Image (cartoon, rainbow, N blue to C red; front, side, top):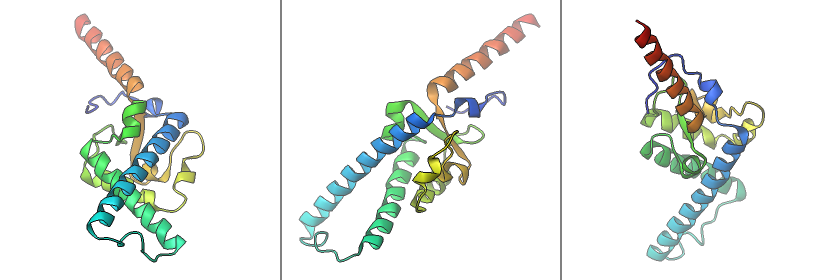
Length: 163
């Protein structure tokens, strides 16, 4: 859904902190399931390749952050700004001008997630984590956005009837 009107207030449509937290928890769970599944497949194909990796905790955390960014990039790029968490909560990532995310936007948005403490940047009201602000994107509540679009269309039709 491309937003055509300049009268739509995306700040009003911004997803609340509760939905953003739910997105994070759901997407984090999905990420870990994907990583365990891929690790299992690799371990089956190349025995002891994953189970005997010799990396320290910091390296493990950094690799995990980059993999999380990669997985989320692939999901949001494939589903135009939606992840499983966003699908369940009825939210969507869009550009600040309301446009649909393209591959570049999804890449920038999701690799910023690899910045340590990015999750802490989501604390506050309104919820505007670094992966939103630095990539010029916003997560909107689709129900509120649809109401805004319907209102705009209604008033446009009313205006056209009077002419």
